[in-house]
Amino acid sequence: MSPLAIAALALGIFIIATRLPGVLAPARYREGLLKFPRAAMPGRVLMAVVAVWAGWALFGAARAAAAEAAMSRGPAGLWPLAPPAVVIGIPVAYWLVIRYADQFLALRGVAALMLLVGNVVVRVADRSDSPWRLVVTVLVYLWVIAAIWMAIAPHHFRDLIQYSMDTDRRCRTVCGAGVAVGVVLIALGLLVY
Image (cartoon, rainbow, N blue to C red; front, side, top):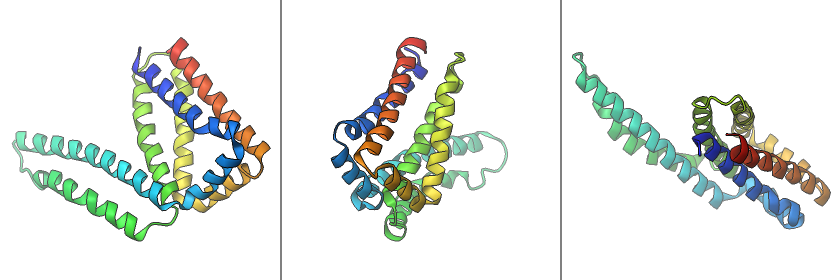
């Protein structure tokens, strides 16, 4: 199974898992989703996951840059200080976000996680030779646009959630469309990629 197939399957399963409850039990789904943008604990957990993921990536990049600077004949500069700065800086940044930017923390955590996942999926899709990889690529770029919008103007996204979850019928329709996208991604992962 190719990495793109695995990515498409994972995205499809995730999308279905997060939308199917809205089709089956729209009243409970709407109630939970309407509270989500301002929920503190899910926001802290999501931001912790993002901090660990981003810290891991930054630490790897800083170690690679420090090693490259040490192997070159020129001056090392500040690169040897980069890995310790990441180890200290990521927890400090996490604390600052939790302490001073706690409005819509859950939405912003989802947005940051969407950007990190989008990066991985686009890299995997770029390595594929299939022309159908563009389906996943376009979907992820739309996902990135939504994540940027979520991070910049979370109150707009909250209003969009309120509009799309206004009634049980609207909730079922929106979530049904999400389930359909998930099914398409799973079909692509199993049959095409």
